[in-house]
Figure (cartoon, rainbow, N blue to C red):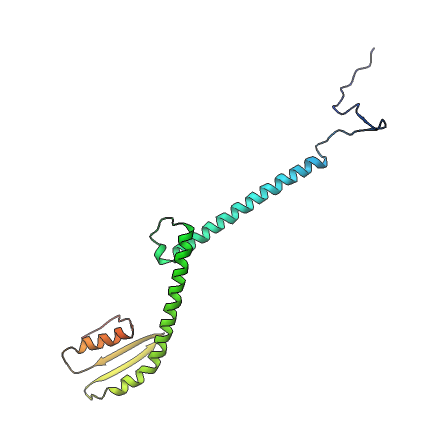
Amino acid sequence: MKPKKRKQSIMEGYKYNDTNIIPPILLSSSAISINKNNENEADQSILTERQRRAKMSENFSVLQSMVPTLLKSFKPPKEKIITETTNYIKYLEQEAKRLESLKKCQFKEPKSVLSKCTNHNSSKNVAVSNGATFFAIQLPVRQGLVLEVVKVFEKHRAEVLEARV
């Protein structure tokens, strides 16, 4: 009986310096694991970038919904969203300054306005509740009087919710 010939691996028989055999490459070798680590890092990097872009898109959508001039636009470019947002912020800052100055004027003027009224047939009541101011004004009938009163409210940019004549 002849001994069976065993199959040789690719690297069998190769020698290094006539004494050491070069070991075969195994799946657990460091070269393959480094390559797999690089693939995992690349996959992780791609995933992170996708998440970042999704978050940015979500933020632009939220920003678009908050700026009134962009509400009618279906999908404006990001440049337009940023431009309109900065314009809207500037507008809001100006509006805040205007309201602050109006607030200061309102605290000063009512004393002088009330003291000018000397007609004994008239009455006025002012009530403030939760930041809203209510005026009740009773005056004798005179042509153009309602227009005069409305102009005063308009001058001070007051919002008239109800008026009875």
